Structure formats: structure tokens, C-alpha cells
Image (cartoon, rainbow, N blue to C red; front, top):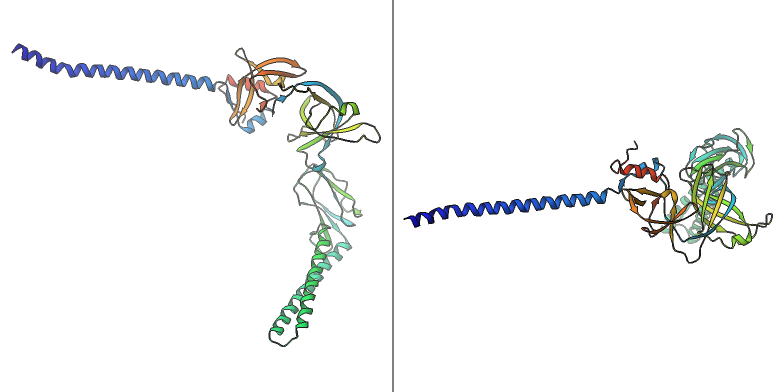
Length: 387
């Protein structure tokens, strides 16, 4: 009996013991899982601690400029005075296409215009003649088409001979040609203007008015300048270089433009193959991005042409792009959501450039100005509230 009682007691206690072991194992697994999650979260936080989240508007409001590093060392620099000019394809003169009196001027200096906007209206006898010729040619063309349809009907009914149909078809063709010619002649003057004796002068490009020599009520001759319109989202600098120095400058050569506390990098777009007749120097043109209206046409500046060292593929960045964070040297690389503090190894300085020994390959887009604001933001959680 004792033996049976012991066996019964053992059978009752065995499931409880197994359940306890299972609970211990589950608890151990849960603890391991939580530790893994904590480690994962820690790793994620460690990865994200170098990220700064910014929108494009916040980047612009913070005055942060983005550019690619310079690949290739600099053998030296040629520093010359230069002059800011408008992009030759971005400056257009609006001239009077016919002589007459200015009865309307729609824009003032500095105002924006769009391509095709009317800028001035000229009242002229010539305009009246051109418009009248278009109306007369249109009426003749309509009459010729009506005669052609009548002759086609009569020929089909065998009432009119074929030669009358051929003559009507020829007359209709000639009338259509005369109408197109009259319309083209009117179109070369600008067209529009409202009244029969008025012609509108339109802007050939989008931009803003930078000159307006025209005066309301003034009588102007054909080809007189009325407006000058410029699209200054890009500007150029023009410098005169000695023939010896010009031989070391190529299209694509980096140029640093400085003036009155401003500095911007551009690229040489043209090196003249001929000397200027008056100065006996070589004109060199470089292009600058001017989306922020940093530069004004006619402004004198200093241009430093950076001569590349042959065979050197080293990567360099402006000294303003390099920051020190937690005993690390970093450069802020542009990402789809903002910037990332990328550790780099900085080498020697070359003027205001720093050679980067490792960490960049030259294809990145980096913050070249105001990177200290990004450094400050890392301590505030990686975001900026610019609104």
C-alpha cells in the first residue's frame, strides 16, 4: 500500500515540476530576447546618433551650402581681379520692332517677368498697316475658299469646266500663302497690343528687369532698347590671364571667388583661344551658381584659379566643412533626410583646404559652410526647428 501511495504522489508532483522547469526556460528565453532587443536598440541608437534630420527648406534657412569635395591636389593658385557678369544666355534686350509712340510700359526695375509677358505697347501707323493687311489677306483667303467649293460643286454637276476648277484651286492656294506671309510679318513685330494700330513688345525669357531706358509717351525708332531682362540664377566671372598662365587653366578648373565677406566656388567654362586685341591677355570665363542672389552684375571680385597637380587624386574639403566631435574628426555628408557626421582622417592643410586621407571618396555631397550648426544639433537630438 505504501508503495502504491508513493507512486500516486510522484505522479501528481511530476507535472508540476515539469511546468516549473518550462516556466524557468520561458523566463530565461524572454530575458534573453529582451536583452537582444535592448542590444539592438542600443546599436540602432548608436547608428542614429550621428544623423541630423533636416528638410531642404531648413538647410537653406540655416545658410548651409552643399558641394562635392575636390578631387586632385592643387599645385598653386593664380589670383586675379575679375568682374561679375550675367550669363550670356541669360540676359536679353527687348527692343522696339517698329517705330512709334510708347503708350504702355508694364514693368519697373527689379520686377519679375515670364517668357512671353508683354512689357511695352507701341502705337504706330506701321502697326495699323500690318494688321490691316492680315485682315485683308484673311478675307481674300476666305473668299477664295468659297469660290473653290463652288467650282468643285459645279464641276461635279458637269456645269463648269475643269479649267475653272484648277483656276479656283490655284487662287485659293495663293490666298492662303498671302495670309501666312501677312501673319508672319505681323508676328515679327510682336503682335497683340489690343487696338488695330498697337503692337506689344514681349519678354523673350523669364527673369527680372535690370534696365528700363524707355519712357512712357516717348517716340522711339525701330531697334531702340526698351528693357533689359536677366535670368541671374547663374552668373559668370570674366578675368584676363597672361598667355603663360592661361596655358595651365582648362575648362573645369576650380575657381574661388571672394568679395566683401562672401566666398563661392565655381568652375572655368571657357578659355579663349585668342588674345584680346586691346589688352593682349587671354579672356577666361567661369560660371557661378547664383540661385541665392549672392552676386550682382558689374560687381568687382577676386578670382583664385586653383591649378591641379598632375596625377594627384587626393580628396580635399574646405576647412569650414571639418568639425571635431567626441575626439573624432567628421565631415557632414548630405543624406536624403539631412546630414550624417562621417568620420574622416584629416591631413595637411593647403590654404583654406584640408586634405582628407580617408573617409571620403570625392563623390559625396558635403556641408561646406555653417557645418558648426550641424555639430550643435547633434547634441539636441539630430533635428532643427527653423520655423
